[in-house]
Length: 277
Length: 217
Image (cartoon, rainbow over all chains, first blue to last red; front, side):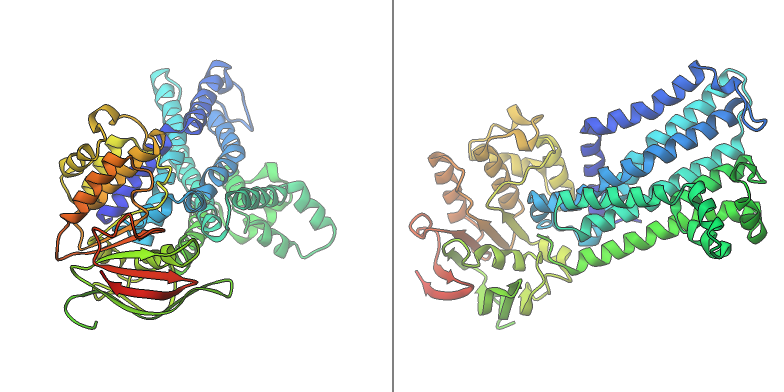
């Protein structure tokens, strides 16, 4: 499936990430979060009638939405531009490695080191639930895993594009932070509510909101346990008038993958066409 | 291609950075068996020329390496090219991981690299678990030289390869270079000719992106 050089870059990048303290802090954060939720009895509490692991998974998704995008952005945007700045890229790309192999190898390795700890934390919760006789909502587990993977992919694609595009690590981190702030600002449903009150065309406003991958992730994770989207208020009518629940779930999984893929392809194209060092 | 011996063919090569021509309409052929000293002061265009040959830069004009375009057929070309950079990059891999990585990527026996590094005075066994970036400048250079030479390339590009080496390691390196495959092309970039004149047979001096001296030695 992949050439030898892609495998070698994946292998190399994963090993480098495993050496990073950030990776272990990040992994422990998610693992520790699940442990804390079990310890504090969150599986006993209720949200819209949901208890047990469903309740925990909903909270897990909310935490993931807060942590994952900024972590993916900050940890990934420096990868290509950092290698360029410190001459690692000059040397690595003097070896028989194609530009595309280098780019995709780094992207895939990043996906593995970012997604696997989150998935293991979620899987760990499911396994612990099985051991302790708590009902495991496997449908929710698989859908949430897919949703988390698509969230990682979209921000990886954006990050790799930024990393190829900018000239310095400082610029990369600043750009990533601004993009994150922008997306977070437009996730706020209150903001959408205000915009609706300003008598803009609600279809357009909601369509714009649904272009935001963070908004899509949030709505996708809500619709999985709250099919009527009651927590979103009137916005839910607009969404559910246009698409049904299953279609929205498919959109929430595949749209971020598509968007991330577009950015990644764009980044790879740029990487292949410009001076490397 | 000018003839069967031509490993690098350059015709009208120009490289511009922000409207400044760093390489200005270069025309040359580099042949198998040539040992070229690429001389020039800082900013002459030596490193830029090497980077063009490695396919790291876009450029204007014609540049063929082993008859191929270095931008489009990188993997094929770079299987046959060994490179030692001027400044060792801060690679985080351990020496052991680097040996494994190069062995797998280049499909070569790691022992070949280890043998050359040991000859250059680097105790590989004692440094296996050290990150490359934690080695001293000389140790890094020895390892990079061993990777370049151990590949048995048809084209060897070295950018100031002896800058960080102690005199003994420098002697060993020059001995290796003297014994280097006679059918291969070797280009050594340096500020000074006196250091490498005994191992080269052609001197090319660059200044402001142009070749100002090209003579056989």
